Image (tube, rainbow, N blue to C red; front, side, top):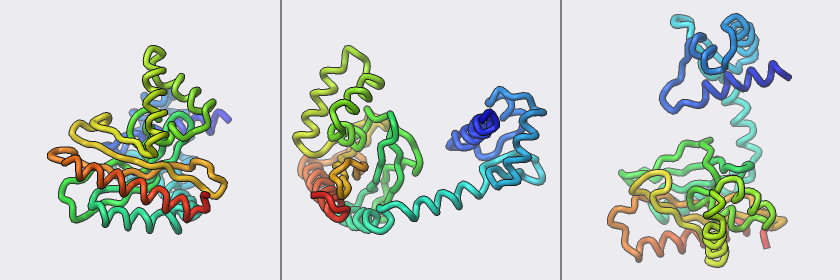
Amino acid sequence: MQTIDRAMQVIKVLAGSDTKRWFAISELSKECGLPVSTLHRLLQSMKQHGLIQQDSDSKFYSMGTAWLEYGLQMYDTFDFVALIRPELEKLMHEVEESVYFSKPIGLESLVVERIDCLNNPIRIYDQLGIRIPLNIGAANKVMLAHMPPKEKLKIVSSLVPENEHEAFLQLLRDVQKLGYGESHGERTPGTSSVAAPIYNHQNELIGAISIGYVNFNVTEERKSFLIEKVMEFGLRISGKLGAK
């Protein structure tokens, strides 16, 4: 069990940087809090299984190709490959903005799909696989708003300061009533998003679709159009997944 924990420490370091891909063993040792000798044995074992790779010249380490293989296999089993992704592509073409599909995981959401509009020179870019606390962003608020009450309260209690609980819960009640969520500049100044919930055949919340856009010079008419479209496609995708 300790070996697995240590291996995951290494993977989190290797995958945790947006700008740095390769790490020296000394850097990994410092980040993971492990002796170089212990880490060397662990890295050799991980390399044999394709979990990491080592540059032959610099001897630095990076993520291995096994993660891509496993990820693509898992990706292919998700409902959104066959049903959600084509709808996201249609939505992207209609609104000419980047669109996303996110899933809740514990206290965070995971961005599992993104369709960019190539015709739009200014795009919002949220990396696939990024984790975002569930109290931040339109997609997360709309998922929180439509979760079972006990689960919702537990998450809010964990993420939101106590003196802000009631105001945040009122916001979620408003989102649930309206059927969509919106966010303005919470993660990136000058950007906004609107989102709608997605349900499966058992009417269980499985995620949210969202539209990200740069809010400079966006008219109320344009915003209303984006809200209308994200709600329309939220219902369409849920219907395709069998939601009643």
